[in-house]
Image 1: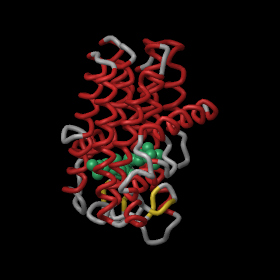
Image 2: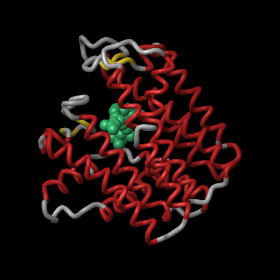
Image 3: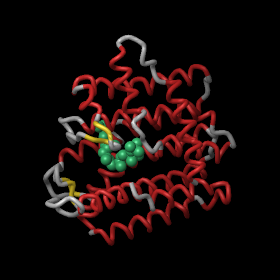
Length: 292
Ligand code: GRG
């Protein structure tokens, strides 16, 4: 798994380098700022899901490369904006200073905007060069996942409930949209580009839903394990922003159990693909055991 991941991270990094505007193009600062966050050491979970799903369905990942890169640009924009003082006000991400700490709030805001806009320029250019319905369908899935029906909708609910208690249904809505939507779009866009039929798309939608939940809950668990090492932070809450998490609602043990349960469901959803799904199966198990 690790060697396969390294190989695909390199493929994604090389493609991102090709698709992003050059740092030397005027006005350099914005391109430098975009590239700073894109190449700050992300795990590339979403593009890898997109490429490997496409490969499973069609035998060829290369046709999904522009789509995978566009999704990583959208993901990076969301992280830059999420870290801004107007949102989570974080100084560090991926162990490095956040974008606004290096470039200032205004350039960071614009770098996020530019990454989002550029992602759709890359997608549109791909559609123009390869006019077929599958690419347009994938773009539609990604646009919905990034917008108010998806990631932005989840982020808005997250902001509305800051400092307030949250019921289980709202918490699932928040995470399914804020984190789950783009993860699901990564899997589905790869499948669509690869030519998946409706039965395959339904199975992959289930896989992505369970993977997204397991991933988010694991993130909350890892957050608590980190926080426990820092005195004064209440277990199970994002103390700085006073946010409810899966751990604050269920406790650490049940949250860990849910990660295992949802991972199992994700694996089961792949059964129609047989051995062809070995990477996607191993990947969700690998994510459920991650340490960071
Ligand atoms: C600002 C529109 C807007 C949306 C922000 C994704 C998001 C919505 C906020 C990120 C906050 C956060 C920590 C969410 C939990 C999900 C999560 C762990 C996201 C980080 O994804 P990874 O772990 O990041 O894939 P890397 O750094 O590996 O790319």
